[in-house]
Length: 81
Image 1 (cartoon, rainbow, N blue to C red):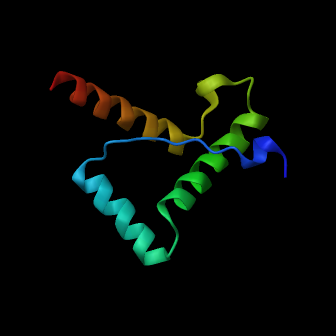
Image 2: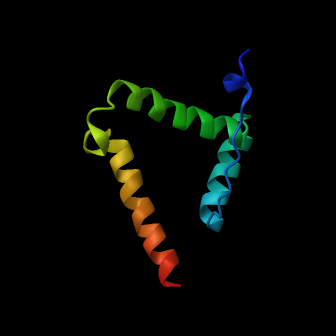
């Protein structure tokens, strides 16, 4: 295994109570760790981006376009507080 395969990065996020409840529920119901769930979701996006890197974000799958819109709304709300 190479160094790049061993390298891990930490992320830190403040979740709303609802988001925390949802991710905890999914983890408990499926037996998958929250880390595993995050990796699976973002590996899917990474694989897509590697094959569509010339499109930029304009070519994002609809699922991700909706997630990005929601994230922008959440960020805007948080900054106004």
